[in-house]
Length: 483
Ligand SMILES: Cc1cc2nc3c(=O)[nH]c(=O)nc-3n(C[C@H](O)[C@H](O)[C@H](O)COP(=O)(O)OP(=O)(O)OC[C@H]3O[C@@H](n4cnc5c(N)ncnc54)[C@H](O)[C@@H]3O)c2cc1C
Image (cartoon, rainbow, N blue to C red; front, side):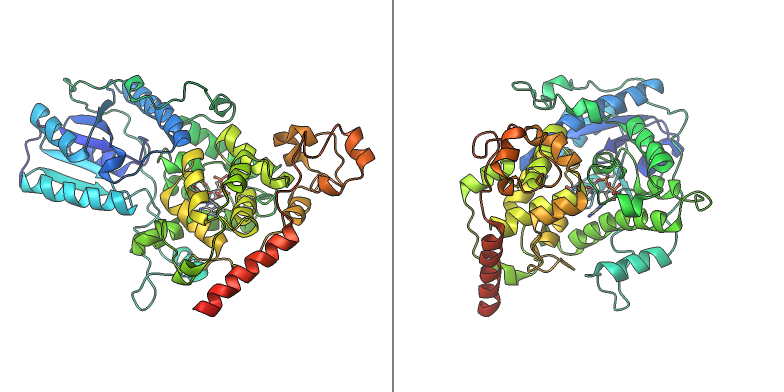
């Protein structure tokens, strides 16, 4: 159907808060039609679920940054809240737009909302076009030889690595033709995305610069300074060794194709092993989305239903101690406090704290997943659920349940001098490396010298790891027997 080139196209931003490598934006630009850049605050009840508090902070700043980028191109972002279809219909009516373009999202709720919207708009003869770009490849692009989805990471990675290269990223259009009469926007302040009393996000700004410029800077700095040595260093939480791009990816301020592209042509300078290992992590994100897309129940149900019979303890005091970083295991407490302070946690430590919650405390992985969803600036429906299920042992290609991290040995291996612990658990700062991960074994004289009184200035362990491990293995074995 021929469309009137003077009629605007609504560019609906979602988890793609960028102008760079934005397929929907480029298509809207190339259509020659004036653009209405729109972001819709969709209510949790519409199916998308509530936005986590930490990510709400990020979203506020990211929308401001996107607005600034649009202002540089003589436009601005229009904000509206409500059910997406209703909002789009109102804007279509007001502006006379004949088309709506967006980039696809791949979480189950997003998919069903978008499918319905597309159907309804097309019924009204509105052109509704969706594009890729949140992932390197569409989740159905890579399938096993039998045409079924992958359930194991390594063959998935081989298919990704051996298949076609991702499409080269698109440059942001230098100029944009935006409608001269933009519809009225709600104010960002009225959305109340920022915490007020108390402002627990005060330290976030020390670490993060939301928005696509911040994402590009982070990528550049990582490729220049940390990619070399990534394979070895990435497991040590005290080293600034990983990209910290996850929150930027979560809201689409940078595309995976742009990141992938930045790792091309570096083989003269950076060992291939580091480049491949970094790409493999990007591929874990692809794999998580592949799983969520093909097995939507991954988000909330045990992927392996054998785990449905596992008897959880779900003790509320233990859960609270874990959330607050007061378990008496320094590496666990450091991780949980890093999460409070910066809305982010190092991957190695995420694995340790998740294992501790699930196996040492026997608390259902879904409670941990929900807490992470609320507190992580990079909360991501696919990565979060897939990773929690990976640690629990209930997921696809998961770590076996009986592989239970010892929080002391993990700390000693990956934070040998205790630098990471000392950053986030200052009350242990004066303790030497020998006992920093096991203060409960330190001689009293040494604790006195370090100003530590166990049970007062720092907690005693809330569980004994060896007994907790036996309890977990017994619970697991009972499930197996029942199966
Ligand atoms: C219990 C648990 C929960 C997690 N929840 C999330 C989450 O909500 N959001 C999230 O983005 N990641 C999650 N992860 C995965 C991982 O911890 C983070 O992606 C990573 O720490 C982000 O730091 P980075 O950007 O510096 O990673 P880098 O090491 O620089 O890796 C680059 C990118 O690759 C992807 N990536 C890296 N590791 C993984 C992984 N194990 N699984 C999937 N993708 C990965 C991320 O997109 C990351 O930004 C979780 C891991 C665990 C164990």
